Every structure is written in structure tokens, then in C-alpha cells.
Length: 122
Image 1 (cartoon, rainbow, N blue to C red):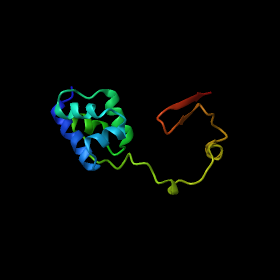
Image 2: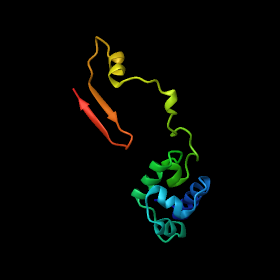
Image 3: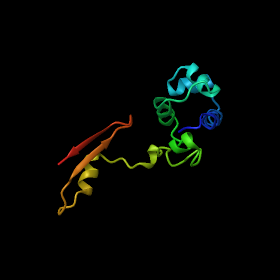
Image 4: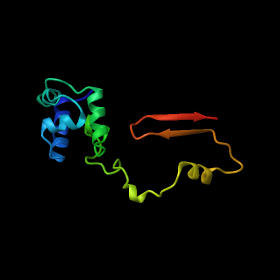
């Protein structure tokens, strides 16, 4: 069970960390301003959708820290790598280099930037 008062303090810490107002934070995560206001005042509890929107918009926020205070904020493990550091390789080249002659591919999973994925099984 989520402690609403403690969650509110952690949410306020996230808003302050990014230097946002409640309304600009609401706009960035794609919710109505009243949603933020009601959660911060303790009137409403956050929905799963609300929490997922925060996590998707702010990768430095960890789920367990946001929900129950366990972990750290800000987290640097969720920050995406700078694209300059990633070698310019085609997917086909990567697959060819990883295939061993004596092994069979069991499945391939492709992850997309929007969080969706495709699973291909042999």
C-alpha cells in the first residue's frame, strides 16, 4: 500500500529537482493540472497511469523510490546513452557478427523507443 503523504513529498521533490511548477510538470507528463494539484493536496491517490507517465517522461526517477522511498533519486542508470557513443552499426551487421555456426537462434526481441516490442521465435 502506498503512503500518500510520503508519495506527495517525493513527487514534490521530483518537481522541484527539475525546476518545474505543478502546471508545467503536468504538461510534461501529459495530465491535467488538477490531477497534480489533487495529488499534492492529498485529495487523490496517484493512478498507475499517472506513475507510468512520470517514469516515462523522467528516466532519472526510479519506480520503487517514487512508490515507497526505497532506492535513490536522481538515478543515473536510466539515463539514455549519448548517441555519439553508440557505434553506427546496422541491425543486420550486428546479427551477423553475433551468430555462431554451431548455435541456432531461439528468438529475437526488438524493443522500440515507445516501450513496445516485437518477439520473433524460431
